Length: 475
Image (cartoon, rainbow, N blue to C red; front, side, top):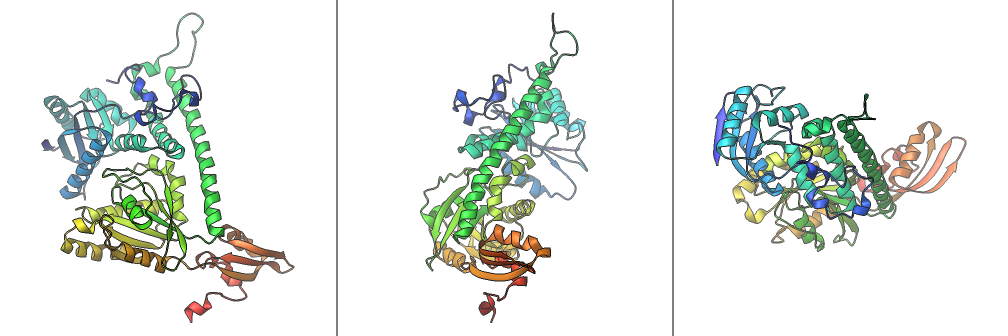
């Protein structure tokens, strides 16, 4: 592989006909199409790549190690998507170039490298604007892809459930919409000929309108999926079933750990984003309590905003969890950086302050000294659940982990009774939201309620309670 460091043709519409369907979704029935000629079942915006040159921009404050680690991950992402890396090129700049992301001199150097290595694409380890992508393709004469396109393609290959497929397609179309103009000169053709003179409607406008209709439908479908999930979550709360969510960087071993804890039989693969769809399994704790253990999509550095938005409904399951198990690949050289990347995503979705237990997985593959140093480094991020070392593959530490889950998961609900003034009606609404209202009386002074609720959800209600049912625990 060649590596370079330095200072500084849109396709025809027919050629891009593969934009209509993703490889993972072409098998879907023709009967599911919403209208003839509309974007169907996702969009293959990756386009086949055999040999690519990776391109990265090193901004001030970014170390060479960080740049190389990110490019190593980008290479793995490209390989997972079905491409291969034949060269790398890095430029240090104070800020990205508005027109071409990298400087003009570096664009020329990149073009020479692409031709010398017979590469058919340049893949950037960052997000490109539509204009940057279009300008670079014109100057380089090959496909130009960015990090988001590659991740979207991986997600499209792995989505299997109806909800996962809809989430990926929404992210794809949201990405594609502002880039329509750059995908082919034919997209901007004006209607012509007898009977069609005048302002007309460009093909670009037609495609944009169709995409917007499809996006609206997908968002509506995802809202329906969310309602079903909320109903299930409400049932779990009312039936006093705590939820424990597995979160972590992609390929950290979450699915393997779920199998080790519950014999779930979840798909396990040594590749990025093997799990996209939420999986829930029942876990019996040593004290005979039942909890629901959930596993969902892994995170990654520079996770595309479109994906976070599209998967927000699925990620909201994490917000309802009583405990997060943050699974870390302890044998990975970038383990600390992965922990911070997951923390960033959790904060973005509003789960940054949830009770968290950090699970250092793959202990059988990690150096003992490195493992000790990692445990010390991440302990402050455990919020304050603690840190435990396990190997899901060998079973080491799994029983101890289940014991810790039993210790960290809130106890069963208790009954809280009290008179809530009408001025604090939001507290009553919160009781309905977070617990099960057993009895309610509207009195002259306010609303008297009897609620079955967990201590975590009862904090506001306890201000008006006749008795604190958890007082014995503090004594």
